[in-house]
Length: 264
Ligand SMILES: NC(=O)c1ccc[n+]([C@@H]2O[C@H](COP(=O)([O-])OP(=O)(O)OC[C@H]3O[C@@H](n4cnc5c(N)ncnc54)[C@H](OP(=O)(O)O)[C@@H]3O)[C@@H](O)[C@H]2O)c1
Image 1 (cartoon, rainbow, N blue to C red):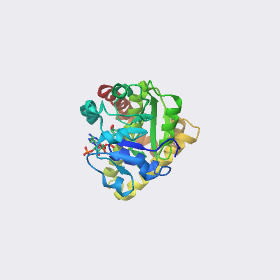
Image 2: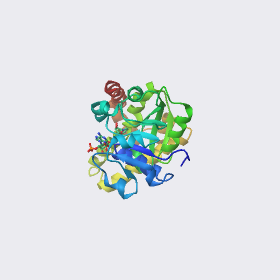
Image 3: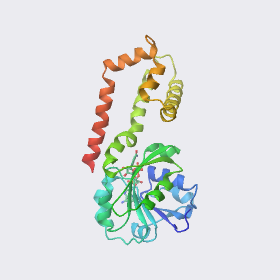
């Protein structure tokens, strides 16, 4: 834990905040992580993290505030947070579709790092994109990258790329779960139990992801390696093509980006 940091505060202690907290607990003492959440998630107190009764105290006593409420809560409540005293080092937003300017308006001059995490962060395998607001400097960005490092890989992007990031890695886990649902549905017809199909599919996704990242081969080359002429893979791929699956997937990515733009 950096010597100059005493408290990292979470406004909202739900699923994503909990995942970040669990990563931070590897390098921060529990009492340096504090939360305000009207739902009062028990796990924070049980781990020795601080629970605040009001957002006022949370802001006043913290070095960094992580905005981890839902975007709609931010929009509805932001005026009540506007005048809260904050003399810490900066703020981190994980809220989808909320631009850093929206927080800068509430806290003029404060460095803001906007991020887009994803749910695999809950199992220490997240992907987090970060961009800096107009008051943030490189060292703020690096500080926040290091915060996420125990539970995610990080990438720095321009803020205007965040809608594209949301479409790929923010929503992406759901696309894979969607395919997993189909594997489950077909398990019986394939002569397998759901449990067997689930293991086969999840390990296949993990292995393929490692090859995509580290083999040095393009997706097209990797696909060709598995596709013998007239073989089983080709039979499946031809069926996907007849169903225009690739086009539908591409359209889905664009729809997610468009929705992210609309939300912000
Ligand atoms: N889930 C994802 O895949 C994902 C991916 C990227 C980014 N994000 C972003 O992460 C943020 C949190 O998402 P999540 O999935 O962790 O949601 P979540 O589990 O619902 O957590 C949000 C927490 O904020 C609490 N809350 C509500 N009003 C509050 C207030 N006025 N002050 C303080 N806390 C309040 C909620 O309590 P109640 O439950 O009682 O309302 C809840 O415990 C969202 O902005 C989302 O856009 C999520």
